[in-house]
Image (cartoon, rainbow, N blue to C red; front, side):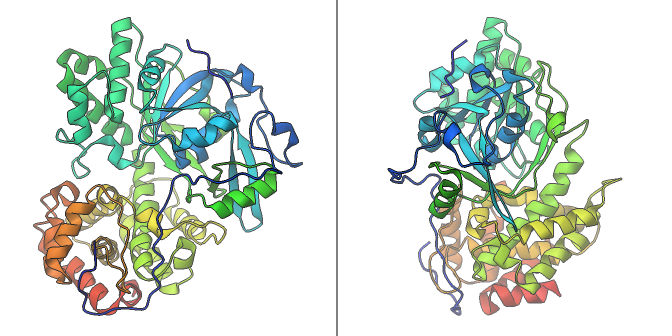
Length: 525
C-alpha cells in the first residue's frame, strides 16, 4: 500500500435588445500572487488561523485512504468530502485520494496546502469558513495514470466515487447507453491499460483487481444523472464487455449504488479568495463557496463496507430513485430554466433572477403545476420542498452565475426537462413552462445575446449546434427543427411530436421578437 503524505459569431436577429451582456469566461482555478504577509493554508499554518476558525478535529497523520474520487471538482469538495471530514474522527480509514481526469488545476491548488482547503458557507448573516482535511492528496491522471490505477487496484480502496459531470460518462444522454463512437472510448478500447475516460479507468482498475484475486471496489456515482448507479453500471459493463466478454461478466457483480446529491456551489472568484484570506488569516488558492443546505441520499449497497454516513446527516435508503427524480425535476429543471431565460434576460446571478417577480412566478408554476404532479413521493411534502428551493435560489449571498449553470446543456436537458415533458405529454397535460426552458436553451445556444453580443456557449455539441444556428438564423421553426434533430438530446419521439413542436416554437418566436423578460412574463401567466 502506498504511503500518502497528508501534506457563434453574430447571427442576424430581427431585433436587438439592450439587456446587459456580461460575457464571462469561467476559469476553474485562477493563478494568483500570494501575499508575503499572509501564510499559505497548510498543515503548518493550521495553528495560526484566526480564532474561531473550524479546523479538522482529528489527527490527519493517522488517516489512511479508503476512497478514490474521480473528478475532484468544487462540488465534491463542498459535498462528499465534507461528510467524510465529519466522520474521520470516528474512523480514520476512509481518507480520500482525489484524481483529476482532465486538468491539473486542483492538484496545483491543493498540493502546496497538504490537501487542506476552506469551505465557506454563505447566508444572510455572513460567510462562515471551515477547513476540510479529508482529502489526503490529489493526483493528475494525465501524468500519474499508472500510479492512480495501481492505487485503485489496492485492496485498501473499497470505494471509488465519481463526479465527472454528465459528459464524463461518454454516453448518449437521450438513451443512457455507452457511446461507442466517443473519441475517449475509441482510444481506451485501443489502449485499455492507459485509459483516458472514467469508464476506462474504472474497468482497467477492476481488471487488475480481478487478475490479483481482489474483490471489486464499490463504484458510487455522485453525478446528477437519473438512476446514476444503474446508469454508471450499464455504461461501465458495456465498455468492459467490449474490451473482454469475460471481464464484462465479472463487472456485472460490482456494486453501483445510486445516490442523490444536493448543494449549490458557485464558481470561486478572486474576490472570494480575498474574503476567505481575510477570515482565515491565511491564503487559500481554491476555497469553495456554498450554501448552508446540503443533502445526500444513498442506496445502501457496499459489499466491502462503507463509512457510517448516516451518523453525519446522510440518508441511507433502499431506493434513491424517487428522491433523485424529485431533485432533477424540481431543483435542476428550475435551475436550467432560470439559467437560460435569466441569462437572455440580462441577469448574471440566480439571486437576481429571483428578484424579478415574473421569473419567480414562472418557476413556482413550473414546480407546482408541471413537475410535482409527475412525482410519486408518499410522505414527502413537495410543497415544502418547493418553498425551500425558492428560498435557496433567492439567497443573495450566493453568487451563482446563470452562465455557469448553462454549461453542457445538451447533456443536462434530457434529465432536467425533457423527461418531465414526456410524462406530461403521456398524461395529456400542459407543459408551457417546461417548454419555455427548452426554448430558452435553443435561443441561448445560437451564441448570440439579445444585445447582439457573443454568448460563450460551453457544450460538447457547441460546434454542431452553432452550425445549425448559423443555417437557421432567427427562423424559429428552422432553428427548432435543426436542434431537435439532435437525437442524442431529444431522441426520436419529441422530434416527431407536433404538440411539443408547436409549444416550443411559439416560445422561441417570442424570445426572438419580444425578448426573454416579456416571454417569461407571458408564460408565467
